[in-house]
Every structure is written in C-alpha cells, then in structure tokens.
Image 1 (cartoon, helix red, strand yellow):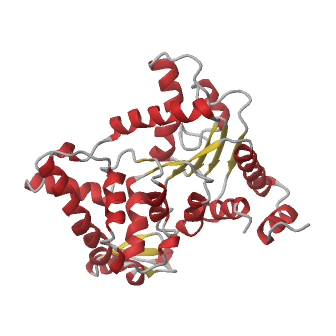
Image 2: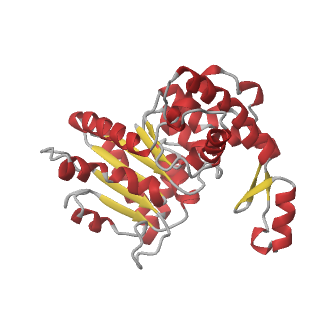
Image 3: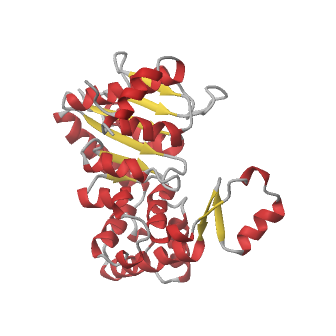
Length: 325
C-alpha cells in the first residue's frame, strides 16, 4: 500500500550511488527513532536563508529532532527571513555578477548569500533593535543567557509578530522556541548579531561582555544534555554541512570519556553527513565516518552514512521522507 508520494518516489528511483545513500540514511534515521532513540541535528552553511525551515520546523514539531547545534548565522537568519521576507531579493544570475554589480548591491544595503540578498535595515537592524532591548535589560539586571535564549525570549514576547512576513509555521526557530528545544551555538560571535553585540559592548551600551554566554559554557551545557539523554536512549548525529556546527558537538563524547574520565559513555548511535566537502587535504568537514572511530566519537557498529551532494536538495528530501509527506 502506498505510504506517501515522496516515499514512493524515492524508493522507486533512488537505487544507486548518492541516491541510494540518501534512502539508506533516511531509513537509518527512521529506525533509530522507531527504536526509541533521539536525534541530534547540526546546521552549517546558510540553511536558514535557504528556507530549510519549511521542512525543519515540522520535524521539530513532530519530535523527530531533539536538539540542534547551529552556527550563529543559521540562528539569526531564520528570524531575518521571518520578519523581512518580502524585502529579500533573489539574484538568479549571481554567477555572472561583476565587482561593480556587487558594489551596487552593497550600496542598496543588500547582503548577498549566493542567489539571495538579505536586506540590512528590514532584517538585521530590525532584529538588532528588538534583541538589543533584551541584552540591555539582562545587562542591567546582571542576568546572563545563551544567544538562543535571548531569541527564544524575544519570540515568546510576541514583539516580532507584527513584523512577520511568512507563516510562522515555516520558521524553525519559532518551532524550536515553542518546544524549548535544546540549542547549542558555538562561535556565535562569528555572526551578524554577534558582531552587533561586540559593538554594543565597545560603545559601552552593554557593560558586561559576559551578558551573553559563550562557547565553553555551551560545551558544558551540551555535556550535561548528552549524558542525561544518552543514559535513557541512544542518540544519533545528523550533520548538515561541515564546520563548527558539526565539529563542536560531535566532540562531546570523547571529551566526556577521555577528558572527564567518565566510564561507560555511549558513542553516537547513528551518523549521517550531507556534504560536498572534498575528502582530502586534511578537511575535517570531508572526513569519512570511519576516521571518527579513531577519535572515540563513533563505534565500529555505528550505522554511518555520507550523502555527497547539495544539502539544500538532500535535507528537505530526507525530512519529507521521514514526515511521510
């Protein structure tokens, strides 16, 4: 009997090479959840500007994702899109742009991400004004929060709602905030809002730079989450792209075992990476799963998959497969 159009299509057509890896990874993900496992997802690149929220938000709502590590860019860019979508501009011929064309975009305050331009005033400055109030309030009160906690607080306040320009059901940050989903954002300072916060501190608007918690505290928080979660269920690792979003959280297992000397730490129970990074030249992002065994991150029997393709194509397909869309 037919389950869903997407599942039927994938099972019929995706039989070999990267296509087969895609369905193997999706079925492995499904098997882990069906057995009571939890899934940890990492977001690199510009997945929020690619509007991955269209499928990621529903994955969160349906409890198919139990924690996320993302870059500071992905954290904020979902909300940029939420409040400024109508002001975005797509540049389909971005490969043909000259330096003068790029300068013209800058002069219009359009920040280009591949084929998509983010409007500075409507997106970045609007969010700066809103979250800046929360930073100042916390700073005055001597309160310290993680970057995502400030944004969760902002979403819950309803202050952004008059500015919504997409259905909030398609915002993964709105879905995450409603679920109080554990988020971990290493290297948050390497983001627009991170830069803005630094500027506020340098101007003296914010007295304490530690008002926003940082990466070491995120690792400690992640260690607590992983120990508590893996004690009750196996935890899988679904990595979209490479970089710090993937490298930071996967290290929590060897850190607990080798640095804290905790015995019986469970390895990640599933691993999948969607990436087109070259598996050579010392690339962490391109390292095959077997290499992670030598670092104590995966075990010899961890189901592991690599789909070497464009994550903006592959991730929505896998999510649609899991959602029976």
